[in-house]
Length: 226
Length: 226
DNA sequence: ACCTAAAAGTGACAGAAATCACACCTTGAT
DNA sequence: ATCAAGGTGTGATTTCTGTCACTTTTAGGT
Image (cartoon, rainbow over all chains, first blue to last red; front, side, top):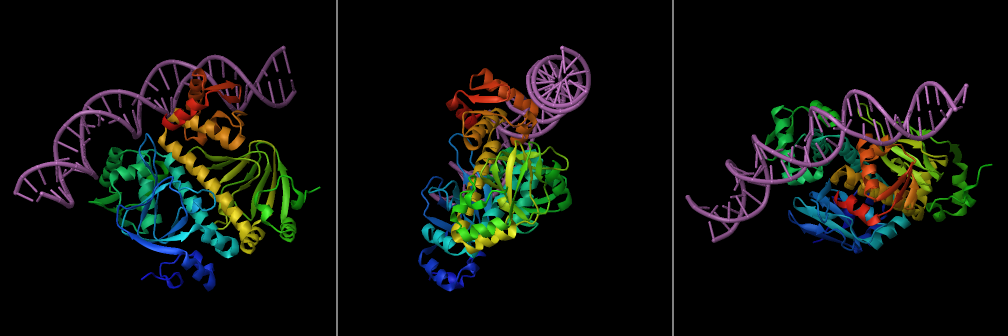
């Protein structure tokens, strides 16, 4: 009971640029899969012959190192492509990807995807949009990481999750403390301290793993200057 | 005495995908300019209606902040596009750009550039390549910044300059210490100390502003673990 | 060759956060 | 209910590095 791409209600912004015949052709080289929380859907350095589209759920993109803790690069939200950046340049995956919730994904064969790009400039333009948007979002995050110390980094992280990922001032953390630390290049203990401090200062409210941003202005201020 | 795009010897990798009529059309909406060292060619938040192509020379891309020191994002080498990432998404420039040597650049009107992308998927694909390559290169740098302490960051910086920018184990620093510091989110003083240390350890040789990598293996090791 | 201003080097110091060691919760399995 | 194991909270300690205050060097103009 595979959903057809033509009437997929989770479709990407880009596929509206495809003609119905292009869509049917893509569909032939696309297959769908579901994974449960914690599943690793792609491992760093694996050969890649498909683009992944995340229909629903959340995925963590991370880099693994020999001697150091993993670094989490970003959280990928539903209706996004995964690993687009290696479409034209790499044959192996630059990063690893793990489901941090139940997810539904589609694999689209790379050769087909490239062919669609070459054949349809409007589609290509949409893909360029996706690439640039993602790239700028990561740039902003990385820049803020580099100029802040821990409290500021954690404040920035909460804003990122709230605004760019969950789209809500109240959200459940799907990551453990150690993973949050890996997102901001800090340590589990420092995350604890920062969250506790933000809580006691009434900037955020924390109940279990559910965060609510109470004082948005103050949080933004801390993210900028802290 | 404007050079025509068709026989430009500094042309981009992407324009080979253009037909001669497309090239002529592009040429009509392209203009060339030279700047001397230190010239600021685009300022953050300026409205942007052209893509810039760097024919020769080196440019520094940086972000300016209200309260904090500038952050240098990357050094852009000849035969690259500048600010491609805002082509489809922004109407204003996300960053500032300054010439760190004599440069020759071409401005290509954005509307024309977009039109070429929409009309020619092969050209679009080349642009996607440029975008992904740049994005991955920055990702790598940012990741290494976050996981290292100062000596490691400086080692990584030297490798970046040597391998990705100048393509030589021996190169002249076109940046002052403070700018190097802004590249790795550190301070002028720490850069001095790190360079001195690398020098006394015989990992690099420094004569004035000319750097030579003496012990490449060791430098890579420091960049990875230091 | 001299002078000035900007850039770079240097050491002392203090503040921030990583590390370490351990205690305390959860969670799910038996 | 008990137990184990993974996740989390907490304080003491140490290391790193940003900051400060100062000197020395370099570069460009007269």
